[in-house]
Image 1: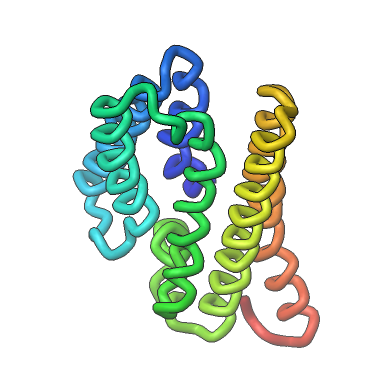
Image 2: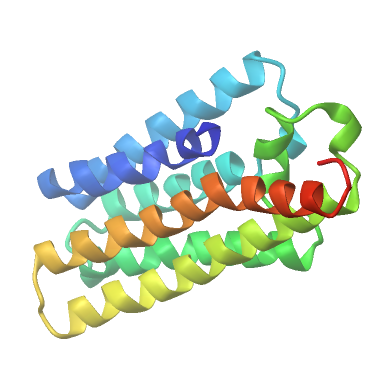
Length: 187
């Protein structure tokens, strides 16, 4: 569940935003920096921290804007905007052939598997699932905003938007490894 650490700033942003979107953005920025710096101090190379770098970048921009224009109508669309940013990050890493999950997966996978087609394929599929979930969640949250569905509906969309790909991420590698082993290969 290492990959969930990278989403802590986003979860904090959602939770603290009830006190004001600028405070939620600041909380996301502070936690994003804490996660990034702690991970770097632990020896993880910067190229393995795509999600963390994207997170800090987003919250730098959002925090500056939120404090500069606290009454902006953008505040009402932060949920959809946040998931859109995450979607762009995920799709961008797929387009660059460096799925953001690679750096996370390498932290818990022996080095000899890093360049295998199976490892790379698993990470492409997992990142694709996250990218799709982010797009669908951004659309669902935007629909909740447009329909004035309320905070409960938005929270439900966001929870599902994180839970489904998280469960997939936990299970999919094991399924692929079991299939590969059944065919006589090694995972």
